[in-house]
Image (cartoon, rainbow, N blue to C red; front, side, top):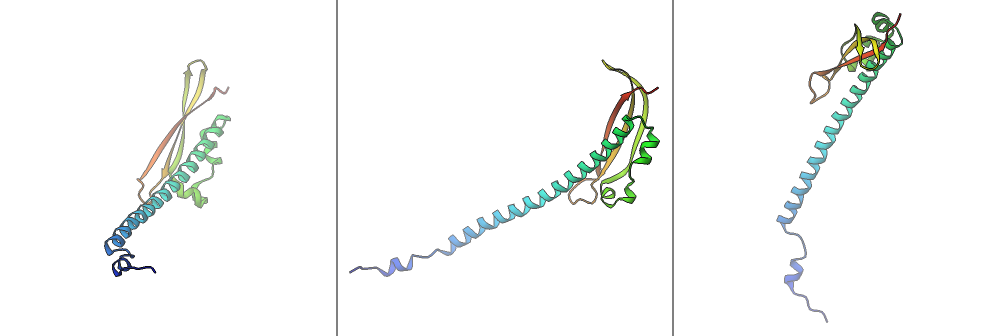
Amino acid sequence: MKLTSTRNARNRGYTLMEVVASAAVLAVGMAGAVSLSASLMVQQEMSWRVAVARNYQENIARLWQLGLTPGEVMSLIPSASGNPKLSEVVGASPTLIATGQVNVSSLGVMDEAVCNFTVNTANVTGAGAGGTNQVTIYRPTLK
């Protein structure tokens, strides 16, 4: 025959303090997960915008390196007004300026151009106004 006391039967559950403490720990963990998720979404959006902008800028540079003039390059590159995804990314119209010829060490005299591009981050919550990226481009002197 097994004897049990009424005291042991009463102490089987959790106290109110234990329940409140575990709920607080769970709430802090959930808040951290939500905060992390929101910041990851902003980072993903910014990465996408920068990747599109850099690709656009690289296409401008490659066309110039093929021998086109800055005016020809800019007429070939799609405008942001005709492309909804590109208009999300373009903060200001890209510029391509041929700056002349330079003597690059161990390569000789080369043509040089500068391409400026601004990434639009104004529509991304928690981001700044945007960043300008400048690329200096070289090509062999064309005759």
